[in-house]
Image (cartoon, rainbow, N blue to C red):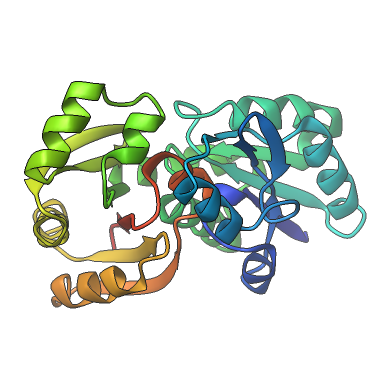
Length: 275
């Protein structure tokens, strides 16, 4: 059976990068000053960053149903079935829309909720690929992948509070005091949600603390994907900080518009799963 693998663009890859890994992308929508653009199709990450730096309001929304339908139809002309893996259902309506569209194709399309984003989504997709290669039956795929989900974590460090404040995620006083004292949150992606894990004083301290949290949460080692928004230097710093026996960096990618829209340029992140 030939299986196609689909992910939405919160995975943090361009369509070309994704297809090189055997993954087909559904574009999220990026909303700039109320106008919607398809991620990577009608707007590039550099344009998102420039809009943010220019003070424009940037947010995101789930993919359009017609985009799912068009991609699924095209792929089912060449493949027997599709595994479609998406950003956490607790953060977006992407999964529910994908499932609604998938019903039109019967059992040929299976939608999985990653309960994560970016590198975490990648780990779930690769686990699904591995389980099918091992002979897990199609109808048992979701149950076979489920044990991995609570073992995936993401640690996200914004470079400034500006974009969390602009998006309404922190209040004006918190923004003012935090900026004054250079206090930044380490946000944790876990169990499908994003919550502040700790607060640190200064960006470099935040990078150090993210590395410490990774080693604490994965004492036996971890598979790691590093991500950033216009901050490759921070990723190289993180690479050095997390270097330890058992920690394997499997890739570096952009945070992508869907993450950067909320945390802003300069963001860095670690996504980890068990070895």
